[in-house]
Length: 244
Image (cartoon, rainbow, N blue to C red; front, side, top):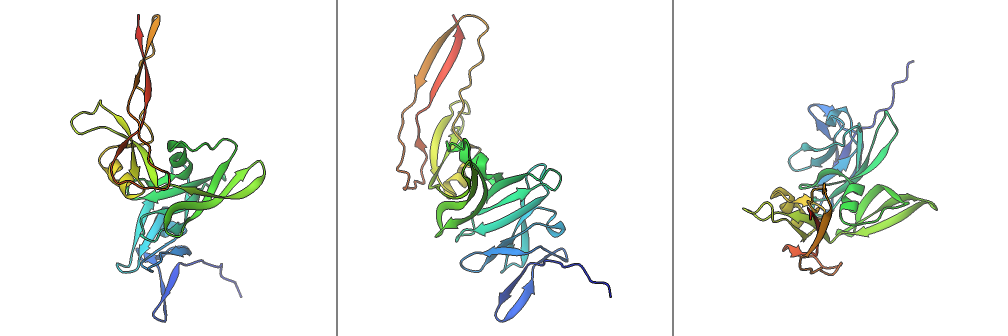
């Protein structure tokens, strides 16, 4: 007798019955986490999700595709926040064997987790967080596993606020580095056209002997454990080069 190959299928138990999670008539891969209220489920990508990370709505009975990273063909959504708005996991490449951590919010979309951290000023020298596996108690804190010179160790990182580059409406050249709450403030900022991370100094390289002018903007940085819904100016020092 020929043995059939094992197949993982995502499913959930509700009111005494098991229900398979499907998209376009195909079974998604296994599920890994469910939100505290039981309304959303996340799991592993497959052909059913077009190799995208996914989030399943129990009430709507629909699978939402969260996206994928370039050059990667597998995604694992390992954890979902209590409010359904933050999802973490990682992606892998069957071609290269590479692994990249990932985070999703409605504004960030499916983004490299380390790109998000470095844009916030986190120094990742000699370490590589590769598997963010959840938030802590529903708060804006993420925990997981990182590679280091000491081997694999656990980590926790707090993200109550996020740094973005903001261009006021009608004044696109008057950019300003600001701090917004995470994730709601960040989602709103990115939706309005702000970009992740601090503003960059836009100076053209001089062709003659340069003079250097430094301009300073006001600074006010909120407490790390506090969250603010309003944009807060942060100091930026920009060196402007000009020919003498």
